[in-house]
Length: 328
Image (cartoon, rainbow, N blue to C red; front, side, top):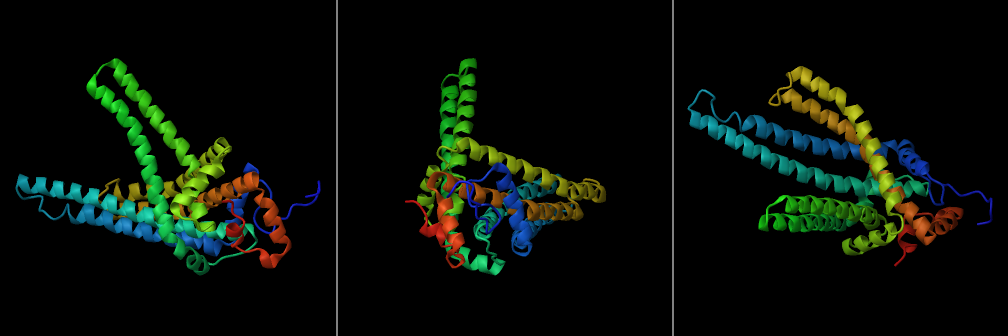
């Protein structure tokens, strides 16, 4: 573009490589411009997840633990404690799986909304669902692929240190184990950042899990430290906001139930605080990752030029531009 020419901005961010402030501001602006869809999506997802977790927790902490009369024999008490412990573990696993699956759905919906917001478009929750539904199998497959990759890398490197210690336990091998754990954590974090953009690619570019995995590695190349810094700052902001929102409910839960974790009101208030916290932080976090993806494409592929051309012809500015303008 000619030097000094104004940069097109049909949506929440200017169509050029973005600064840190523009990424954070854009992640907030798309929520303000379309609160019904963004906050509504987060509210539905977190509420469903919270209710399921609450029911599981209540069933495993009160239902099973009350299956035996405390006045019975010691054997009954021991069995009651054992069943409650087993039920709690199963409930934790189930609630974790449910939350994870719902978070995948939320990521897809909010990514589409941010992709539209960049182009000055608004998507309703229903419209976003219709577009993201065909991508859910690929998104789930990618999530499993990335999770498996990170787990194998961390466990594989750590296992080397464990084997060394098992073969010859001494101070030197213990230090070697600590070193291997540090290496495993470092490599895992490095790979996590390189794969951070893969879910956005699955949704906006309509690629498969393996293709998106490779594409994210390529996009983040040369911008690893910047991507890490922005993501860590976004996570810190989300944590601070979530903590501020959730603390009053945690205090209220402790006061009403005297801190008794078997009290129903304790878990109800904790869940309400968690849901409200998620409504606030989930769209922001998804928006930041989506804008990091957009920034990397503009910096490495000149995608901003294509976006500016589309912005000059509003009829051409739709979500298909992320697919048609994608690199191999």
